[in-house]
Image (cartoon, rainbow, N blue to C red):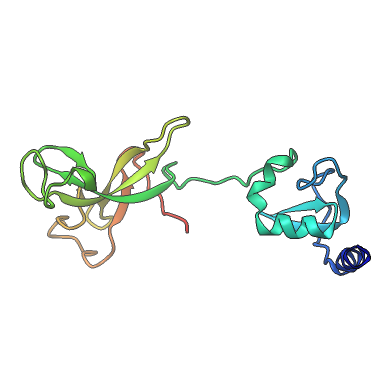
Length: 185
């Protein structure tokens, strides 16, 4: 017993405080204990106060389990891309049937309706609050050199007078008309 108390006091003395004032008053691991300003960790850019060295260790091992016990914690804002969508995903589109297809829809790599091979494409995705299935907006392509537009990068055709044929095409979200979202990693 004396050895474990001594070890706890020793660990408390060697706990390295993080920079800044904690955002919380109570320990998230032991919510009835006051957080100590010299026992802190930084999680998602915010300084979290804890009551003892063992709580520092427990919080550090699984912070998501304890964040709900910190009412002062504000999750960092996740900003969408220029088209207000969350990310870009790859998919398929059948030009003959004018139909969006998922991997699960394809039969032997072909459209289940017409039997032809669909075009590979990209979609901007945005999940509406309370919905599981994201809204999809197909990405189209444009060239600033010739003002040409096209539905698919693979089949895009520049005007004959275009001087920027070798330049990269601009991706455009078909829903917003602005640049497509770039997925952040």
